[in-house]
Length: 157
Image 1: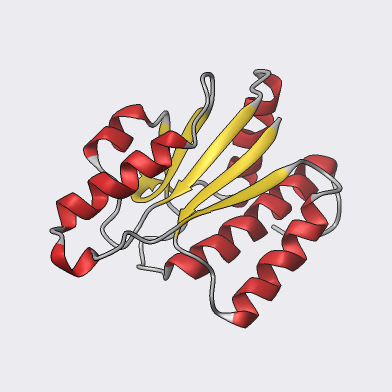
Image 2 (image 1 turned 180 degrees about the vertical axis):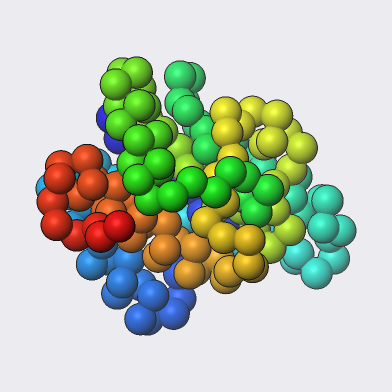
């Protein structure tokens, strides 16, 4: 199984980029992970929030392949513990999925079309987080999940 993270916008904060790179380097020993950064919508100031979500949504959906499992990182999603998240990853692996796509939306969230296509929604916190930090925190949780599944001493209950 390969994990794809589709995110709107670039990571421009240096320390966050370094953290992401560190966890991506660690993850390559467990599972293939790819980050696809979708460029911010141009002239977004002249668009309504709904129009911006629709444009971003089309770009997100264009990155999907038939058979992909799409999981949205969304504030309304379920909030699993790290062990529960590891179990979700294990279950998807056991189902023989080729690709699981985790999507991080833009500042206004996702379009209705993306919500309709999504297989599930996952929330990292009830608090609002910057899109860059969501990337770092989520990649760290992926790494944590892999160490939990392997019984390695990274996670402590």
